[in-house]
Length: 290
Image 1 (cartoon, rainbow, N blue to C red):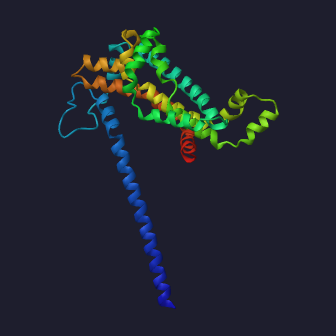
Image 2: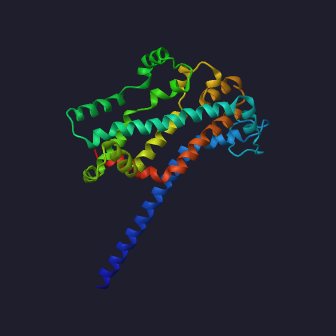
């Protein structure tokens, strides 16, 4: 009896040691992955905070600056029309987010809540466009934009991105989770399809809507290729185009380039932090039900 008790205690201690070791390994792995993912950003921040007297290419690399300075952030704002480019990026990004969420939701609503012939075929065709890279569509969209007189305008930068197949997919998945009985109750009360979409369904899919807004914001804010093609006037440049011009002007001063890159990240980080509480639940709702 006593021998059996000792063996049980040993098994319990072994299980606890294995459990602690397993958690320790998981935490070490997570810390390693976090440092690996944050490494480029930490190095960028370190470069932006270094003064002109420090060698940013020294070996072995030095992460902590000898003398922390913020003059690089001031200089980069004085060197090129930063506020003008920030304004352009804000206008383009905000309009893209609003229209993308609006039109993707409108497109997803009949695909999720209505019955008509060919609904599944239309949805598959929409999804299949996700396999076509934007670079392949760029030339016909560019020609169409010029024919419509959208060259060098905000509309020209925004319109090609106001609806995406991913957005339609995400919102459709969110709509399909909601019980159909809500629609029937609303119709009995006299609501039409638009009222059901706007007043009943949209408030219930807020997490998915926010998730789509975050993805669209990140994509539109960092978009470089399409604005580079459609915009010819420097006054219409967005922040990525301005930073690219900065790297051409200061190819030897990476401190200013790093400072500009850090500044351009701030709106994205703030936007995500402001809406992150909706993010995870929105992603899960879009991924669970097919």
